[in-house]
Amino acid sequence: MSISTTELAPSYRASRLIKGCWQLAGGHGEVDQVQAVLDMAAFVEAGLTTFDCADHYINVEALIGRFRSEHPALAARLQVHTKCVPDYDRLTSCDRTYLTGIIDRSLERLGVEQLDLVQFHWWNLAQPGCIEALGILSDLKREGKIAHLGLTNFNTKLTREILDAGIPLISTQVQYSLLDSRPEKELIALCQERGLQLLCYGTLAGGLLSESWLGQAEPTEPLANRSHTKYKLIIEDFGGWDLFQELLNALQAIGTRHGVGLGDVATRWVIDQDQVGCAIMGFTSTRHLPATQRIEALRLDAQDNALLTPILARRTGPAGDCYDIERDKEGRHGRIMRYNQNVGRH
View (cartoon, rainbow, N blue to C red):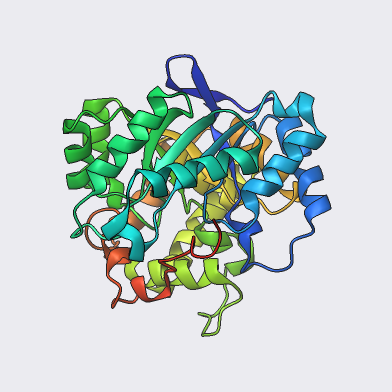
């Protein structure tokens, strides 16, 4: 069984399960680059033909470029979604030269003449210039350097302002999972109205939504990696460790009924939500490939949702719109962010 695709724009399709590459950027253990390239080949052969990366993921664009060079036949089937994330300290001087430099650098690293999808982020919503920066990226799109534009980690209000300004978007990437329902508050309705699809990350909460955490005591600092640190905060906002364990138990029961893992159920739930085009999976190796086939085949029914609905009704957060709490540099979520990741990497 191959992985299904979704049309994000006319004549542009992406695999519904996307291979996320954040874990290859550091903070999750040593990366064997030779093995990572071999794994990329295996993922494409299995039908995960879309990779998600970013300009500020250390060495990841170059690693995908190496894959493209070493496996040209498979590379012809690949779509690469990268990002343009101006550093926090450059937002006051985010001019055409700076942005063009980011795009040209991604083109060079990836070894392509056109970027499939560039997803834009703006750290400080109080700092003017976001829509003007997207206007520059729109110019680069017209020049042929970019095929499609999207957003990453924007709330509904600014997403609407960007669309009203005439910026040609096809998608917005946001965190969305059984633990984090913020897109349901306003963003999904806007995307339905304006024809955008959601590309969702965090569907497995950095691996915390898995059998290995079922029945476990609440972990304390320091946690194993950056993902666990980030998503443990989301669990606290969701309703705490006890409610999280109730969710894991329900997912386990559903998975047992269907003969799949609880993480497969959590991912399928996200894919089934309104306006969700793709789920970005942080697969670290090919050992996760069997899960892609299970997720593809799984269909949740009313009995499954009846187990989940009472638990989800007791969620207490996360609060606010998409990514609002992460933008608060003094808050619990914002304090762990890295705001100037392009410095010294041009």
